[in-house]
Amino acid sequence: MKRRSTRVSLALVFGLLLCMLVPGPSAMAAKPVGATTPVTAPAARTMALKAPAANAADDNLAYPLATRVGSGCAVAQGSGNVWVNKAQCYLQFADQHWRFVDVGEGWFEIQNANTPAGATPRCLVVQGKAGESRALVFPCAGFADQHWKKTWAPNGFQLRNRYSDLCLVMRVNNADARQVKCDNSFADQVWFHGMPNAPTKSPNSNLIQPVYFLHGYDSSTDGPDGEQYWGNTMAQFRQVPVARAT
Image (cartoon, rainbow, N blue to C red; front, side):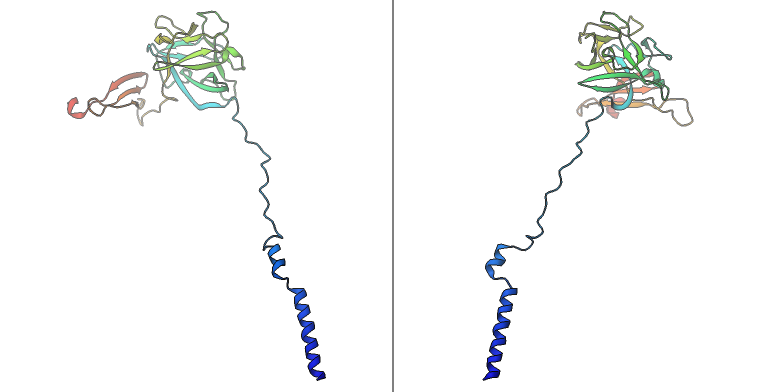
């Protein structure tokens, strides 16, 4: 009898210990698995995204510039502060190539590509507000008369000066570029880009490789319109089906 009561006592003690160690259903429901290691939200970004630099190049390419009258390309021959004149388009010469550099709010510096390494770029500028004033290149310094805006014009764009509010023109009967009152009905105020950078020479030849630009197509009759650059020439042509060309 005594041995049996001892067994009962041991069973009761063991049961009490088990109840103390294992929580009941209500306690387990109040504290779900994982609650002791909560997931924290990602830390907020401390470094804001930087805006592009105000003087970042438009696309780091330099283009020849010509007007729709086809009288030649704008050129700044020589070093220093020289006039911007009109010359026959020789695409292999850097002084006929111009780089558009964004300065913000739709304005650009127009830098001549003929700049020695490490030197301050030279910008297209027309000093003053008088009509018929000539354009020249001058070291870029952020002045308003060195800023230009491309404004829409039929088959191209006008170049409007920020300081004078006049537009760049290159007439057939003038040997230079000037500023005049803006009027996009005059083709000599309508500019367009040529091909970017000078073309490379053909292997074992002094000829410049031809480059073609296509402008749409007409699948029923004629082929696409195009422009061809070959050395110092710039020609327009239209492709036609082979059967019609023979």
